[in-house]
Structure formats: structure tokens, C-alpha cells
Image (cartoon, rainbow, N blue to C red; front, side, top):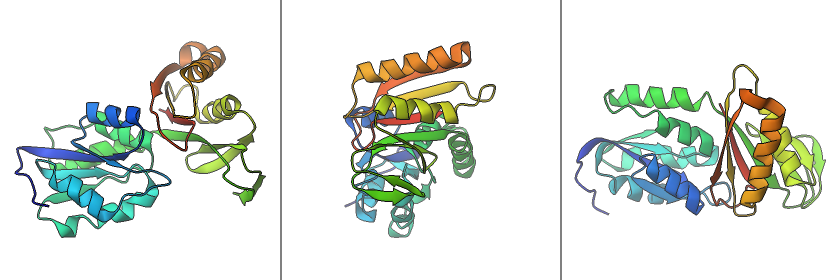
Length: 227
């Protein structure tokens, strides 16, 4: 694929899945969205094509998953474009990074500003056990609900709302945290997301501001951002 001509200094390629999340990253300034996530990692070729389709001198890739970082880092040698990989390991980190873009900075300074913002975000995930197993020292049965905090399983429940509530309660630090974003997936209803938001508001009162987004993502009932 031939590269498009640059018309601006900075461009952004984000990896995401789910209609709502893809729309959100586009609204935040991503030029190209590459479909991918926990169970479907895009290839270096997929990421390269997205970079070549981005009309910018410097292109930042936001993998938004630790398993995609290596493929992303293999793109730069394959193109004349300056490609920079932000080590965003979760969707909330990717969102925070794009919210802190500063086009007045140099390419390196912009990179550092985005990563600084990403690293301040804690991520909670709520998913299900695909099979009976032992994970992080915990015995889990197929179908049980798993709550994860910054990549580590901390909660095993039978109820999605309860698991999400526990994860968010653990991640939220009164006095240092204030914003919580609940991104609900295609296995979750808006009513369930609003129920969770109400539980959190009842618990933390005016110390917390909760936003609800329909991400439509597969695999995860909730992706939770705490900052």
C-alpha cells in the first residue's frame, strides 16, 4: 500500500473493538482504527496499513493492550514515516492519552505528555471464565465472573454488577481519585451500567463523578477507568 501524503504533523492509530469505542476514539482524534483487542490481536501488517493511510509526518500507535505492543513496534522499520508506539496497555490508558494530545509540542514532548496522562489511569475489567482453571492462585469455574484490577484478577463473583462494584471500589481512592468511566460491552445493558453508577454514587457521594459509555466491546462486560 502506498502512503498518503502528510498534511499535518501528528496522526494517531488506535486499536479498539466495539462500535461505541471505535466512535469514541475517532471523536478523540484517531485517524485510523484497527480492529483488535484481547482475543484478536492485529498483525504488524494491519497496523502498517493504518499508518500508511494516516496523513501525518509523525504517527502514534496506541495498542491499548500489552499483547499488541510488540507487533506495533515492528511497524517503524517498515516505513519512512516516523512511527511512535505509545505503551498504552488498556483502553482507558488510550483514551487518557488522546485527551492529552498537544499539537504545539515537539513529537517527543507530545509522546511524553500522552504517556504521562495514560500512566495516571487505573483500569478495571470485568469478564467471564472461559473454562475451569486456576488464575493468579484462584480457582475459578467456567462461566464465573472475573474482576481484574490493572491486569490482575482480584474478584471472582457470580454477578456482573457485584464484580464491577468491587473492582471500582478497590481502585477508587477517596481524595486522589474523582472520575470514574464505566464502558459497558455488548453483553451488558445500559440499565445495568446505570445501576452500577448509582451504587457507586451512593457509596462515594460527591467525591465521585461517574460517566457511562456504551462501548459495545466483546469479551468485557465492563471496562472501568478510574483517575
